[in-house]
Amino acid sequence: MKGIVEERAVELGSYIVENQATVRQAAKQFGVSKSTVHMDVSARLQGIHPQLYCQVRKVLDINKSQRHIRGGLATKVKYRMTEDEG
Image (cartoon, rainbow, N blue to C red; front, side, top):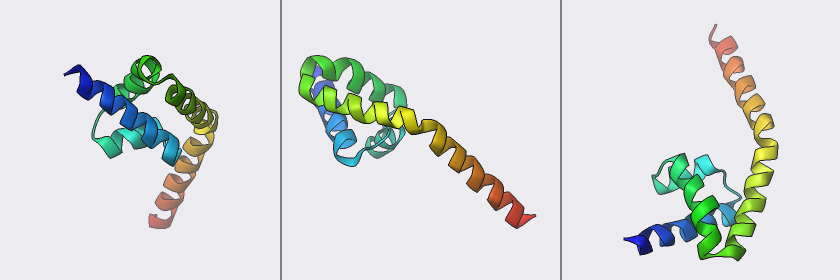
């Protein structure tokens, strides 16, 4: 059973690095929760594949620094759509 979890952690990490994906995007792609993705790529991956862990960490740090921008854009789109309807 442990092999499956470790394999998933490596697959998630590879997906995040290759696609510059967010935790949310990876969770949706693999059909798991955001908590599972976070646990796999932050805790498990560090012990399994340290080099991949460092690459994932860089992507997630960039995503975190841009999070407020994506949220603001989503809100802007949401209110534009409600203006068009009303």
